[in-house]
Structures are given as structure tokens and as C-alpha cells.
Amino acid sequence: MKRLRAPVHPLAWWLWAIGLAVAASFTTNPLLLLLLIGVSCFVVVARRGNAPWARSLRVYLALGAFIVVIRVLFRCLLGAVGTGPVLVDLPRIPLPDWAAGITLLGPVHLSDLLDGLYDGLHLAAMVICVGAANSLANPKRLLKVVPISLYDIGTVVVVAVSVFPQLAESIARVRRAQRLRPAPGGRWHLVRRMIVPVLGDALDRSLLLAAAMDSRGYGRRGATPPRTRRAVAVLTLVGLIAVCIGIFGVLDGQAAAVFRWPAFVFGALLAAAGLAFTARERTVTRYRPDPFDLAAWGVSASGLAAGVLMLLATKYAPAHLSTSTDPVQWPIVDLLPLLAAVVGLVAVVVSPPRAIQDQEVPA
Image 1: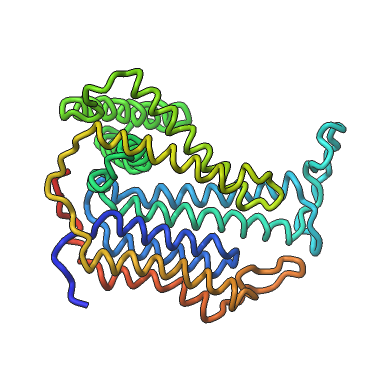
Image 2: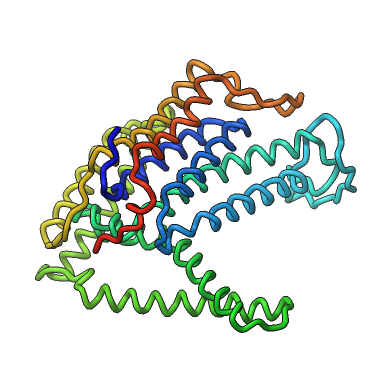
């Protein structure tokens, strides 16, 4: 495919990452999960630019490692009921009757360790896949493509997913400043010289962002009375809650009939009416809208193909999507799950090179 000289649409990177995360959600095979993590990291390293958010991958990798460690510790120390070889024979601490069902310490079996490791890796893979999109997609360009009716929700989501990139940039700036002025180490010095400056820098940047958004008219509304806006917001919120109840009722076969399709349809109508009213009272201008070109279609298709292929693997090759820990077995990978895990690499082929990703597009 001929490479197009334009940055990839940010929504395409998010679709690609969501597809990889969905693929990771269907398996606990550690080899497949490590492959998905490797694919995400390789694409990020190959296609990220020099923007601040592009350096956030290490934060998500650290978060994934923390999740794995915490999951293993909880599995081994607060619920070790496995079988097989005993790795560590810790004394069991008795708990009162109100904590029945919870075990504290005791023998740690190999199956406990592997169960915690696989579960932690399962969640860490999904977090890192989503973090890969955060490292590749420009959050300001992503905010431009949010529909007007979902502008408030989109703003909150974009700000939320921008937290880790901003923290990564703040940490890098503080570390550069510390290298210029080295000081004695120590635990309390670390708090004073790292955590406090990072939090202060994040607060200063938040105030600057709020001032910039206010000067450009973000969040300003039309001449609609406040009472009407509050009523529309309540109706929209009630509608969304009813939609959630309806979805839960449809998926639960034992739910009452009124909490199934009637609740879903009623909630959808209320939510749609509220969002339509919100869209009418706002006027948003978009400067230089980003085209969803062939490269964007290719990137999004490679990620979504990973999720679809892994979903098909649950039906046609489900044997090795999970690895047995009792008895302990070496993880085996079938052809279809392997293809689902590596098809995300197509994004490197169809996306433009790193120099194009460095281009800044005014938001």
C-alpha cells in the first residue's frame, strides 16, 4: 500500500488499540498476552513522534508491572488455595468468623503463583494496549472529532486519558532539572525533590489549560435558561441509567420483563432527546478537520482484525486460549490466536513514518 504523507487520524489509533485490548480480553495464555504487549510496544516505538504524550508508554509499562506484582501478592498471600508443589510454606494466620472465606498466608503453591501471574498479565496487557493509543494519538486532535452532543463527555474523557502523558512529561522535566542541580539522596529527599515538583507542575499546567480553554470559549453555551439545561441534563442522565438497566436486563435471563427491552428503549429515547437538545444549543467551529484516509482505515482495520480473529478463536480454537495451572502445563499457541496476536503489526506497514507523526496539527 502506498504511504500517504499525513499523520494518522487519532481515532484510527484508538480503534487499533481497542481491537488489541479486546483480543487480550479473550485469553489468559501468557504467550499470547506477551505477544500482544510486544506488538503494542513495537508499533509505538516505530511510529510515535516527539510530542509529550508519545513518552507515556513507559508509564503504562510500569503500571502493568505493578498490576502483575499486586495480583501475584494478593493471590499468594490472601487466598492461596491451590494444589501441587509448595513453593513457600508460610504459617497460616487465623482470622475471625466475620472474615470466613478469606485465608491469610499459608502454603504457597505453584498453581497460586501462576494463577496470579496470568490474571495480572491479562489485565496488564489490556492497560498497555490502551496506553499505546495514548502514546500515538494526539489528544487535541481527538477532541476535534468528538460529536457536538457528546462534547462535555468527550472533553472529560480526553482530559482523563491525558493524565498519564502529562505526568510523564512533568517527571521528565523534573528529572532534567535535578540532573542540572544534583542533591543528596534519601527517602524524604525523593518526596521533596520529585513528588512535590511533579504535583506542582501538574497544577500549574492545569491552571494554564483552564485559562486557555476559557479564553477560547470552551464550555460556553447559548441563551438557554439554566433551569432548562439542568432539566435536560437530568433527563439525559436518567436515560443513560435506563439504558444500562435495559442492557443488564437483556443479558440477564432472570430479570423482570419491564427491565429488559422496555427500559432499554425508554432510556435510549430519553438519552437521544437530551443529546439532540445539547447539540442544538451549541455551535462548534472546526479548523482543518482531519481526514480519515487510507492509512487510518488500514491502522484501524489491523487492530479490529485482532479482536475479531481472537473472538473467532474462542469458537474454533479455544483449547489453548487459557493455560492450565493444575496440573501445570506449558502454554501452547494455535495458528488462529497467533495470527490474531500479530496482525496488529500491519499498522506499522500502512501508517506513515515517524517524521510524519511528528507534525503538529493545530487543534
